[in-house]
Length: 634
Image (cartoon, rainbow, N blue to C red; front, side):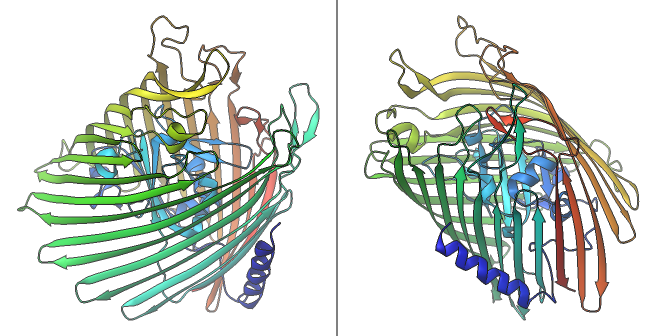
């Protein structure tokens, strides 16, 4: 492992020792957190409206869910408590998909600004530890009318960690196969200024055992990893200005174990990402002007030492963006939001054509109108992308509605119709020897409707949707066996999403998520794949959970069922991944001692020791335990 990681590990261990009289595993995870069902104002729509009053399904995940599930990363939490399907390669790369879309069709945002760059169009969610964020909101359905490209099937809005004045936290965790996590954080506040800093170090050998199809027990080889992350933020007020600046740096060194079929090729990968973002909210009369900007740098080095087809490539990307948004009431019934965005991105990769860059700009207008028990949400956005050799543009409209049929009943009916788009990535267009520079943007037209009951102690929501994708980009081989991308696919997705959560007693909460998806190929009626299910999209996904608290003891039981996924476009059962149910449990004990509080937790993963696979060829870990100690100042 690199000298830099070793040096940071020593620094974090020293910090843990120095602060060990203080507190917790990651920022925002209070040891005495209690699950509470309440109406939460969401920001994923650019309008501060309650989730029950939104025109489409929005799932909110916060500190209660993080503590209950024992999650480490954004991928962990989405896998445990959202209707998104998480595709994970063992304990490595993790991506999210929703409503029959691909991984690149789920937009990921940090405080409203995009995270994914134009080279690959997606981001490894395992690279995002939860100490970087306070909460997240999942917007189901297209988000292009609000945030532009990539949000064709869903969007994940990550809210950067905020300060909790005057708290210090430390924590450590150990687990199977050499797993070690050490973290520390400190927040401060002084009048109108507050801030925080936090860090986390992780390592693991990852050499867990698994069973082959022939019944032979093997171990994952060459699978150790090590990494750290740092985060800082400062916020303050000055007159009419509410300012905030934040940064994070993520660094991970991992050896790649390879698939079951090919085994380890001694490959290794280094991921480094740094991001700085700034925000200023200015009160101007009855309205608010929000100015945002970010700069993100990424570096990925891939090493394959094979003497014949080996390579050592380093890819570097730079992405930045600016946004100005004006929000103002337009009378007593209507709030209007309008703004413009601009950004620039470049990629330097030995496998890409030279001098690849992209300049993008956009303008948007949205509104939220309240008329008695009705709320109307129109929105439209125009985007243009000027790449090295051409300019693409797209118009993304949306109209949504929410009505409360009976004023005294917490029953809300939602409906939403909109469009989305996604431009080809740099890899799609400019990969040397394979890219297709003539690719057109992918398009989506979607409609959904649902009902939500938002009671004081119980919530229930069910939604149905229909989506039509066109110009979907697929990499396919030609007669010589060479692969290249083409605008070939037309697909249709029909589905139902349902969720339920209830506080049965003051100390007992039960809930479940369920989604049914039928995503089919509608490209060529003469093809054997016509109207067959898309590969790797599960028809059924279910996630039940139970959380209970008995005095200082908290218990959480949770499960995840993933239905059969076909690996070929012909719905051949022999070419499929078996259904899998994976259960987990956590138990914790919290205490207070003078100015300090603490939590001791144990997490049991894969309780039934299921042999399961989320991505073909990459087994997932068997049953194992984790033990966590977290302390903080009160």
